[in-house]
Image 1: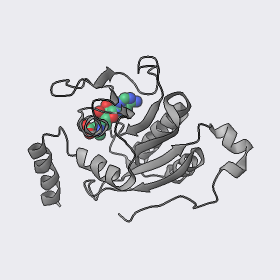
Image 2 (image 1 turned 135 degrees about the vertical axis):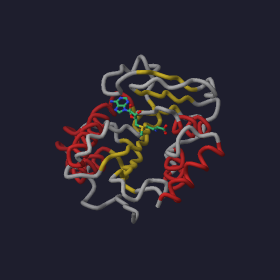
Image 3 (image 1 turned 180 degrees about the horizontal axis):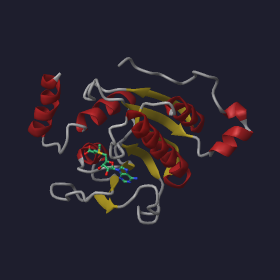
Image 4 (image 1 turned 30 degrees about the vertical axis):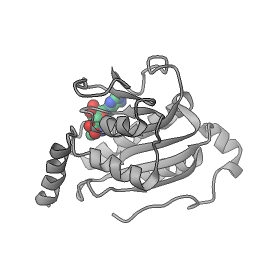
Length: 218
Ligand SMILES: C[S@@+](CC[C@H](N)C(=O)[O-])C[C@H]1O[C@@H](n2cnc3c(N)ncnc32)[C@H](O)[C@@H]1O
């Protein structure tokens, strides 16, 4: 197991990525094509910045990546089309982020772990729900979302909620994710530009159970 971890760590160093997490985003992007050239991307929970590096490469100079984290992100080596914000994603204003809606939001946000898995999973799920609450204000209709979550009791409802707000959603665990980790990645494509109340008022826009879901084996 340690050898597998060392492999990703070594590879990240070799390729100049700030963290091994870069390979999770690269794999998820390869599978689901969530980010495109020229896109405006919101990178939530971005420090130290390996997802920012990957996203900045994909969008190119005509795109833009706004990276937000509580922690300071070192600007050295990042290209000019990256904006850095030391802030709480739950409260940062969309004006601070440029005032435009994003083509995609990618979130690797994780709470500081307490060592109590059930409690950590509940906090992680709440964070994801808070991100979903902000999609109307931040994400373009038809935009895409990728978010990390610690799998726990609230996870199925989070996946259901995401599926209601997007045309297609699913969850998977990339190879670079530690096998023993409870982290999962929910991906969703085609934001409907609606909120939960709209979905509840018009159940026909919610897909039948299971539709559009795909879950890869771990
Ligand atoms: C696993 S790290 C992200 C790694 C990053 N994606 C990379 O590839 O370098 C999780 C980050 O989420 C941040 N975070 C957690 N909650 C947040 C919030 N509400 N607003 C902003 N950042 C948050 C933490 O400070 C932490 O740096």
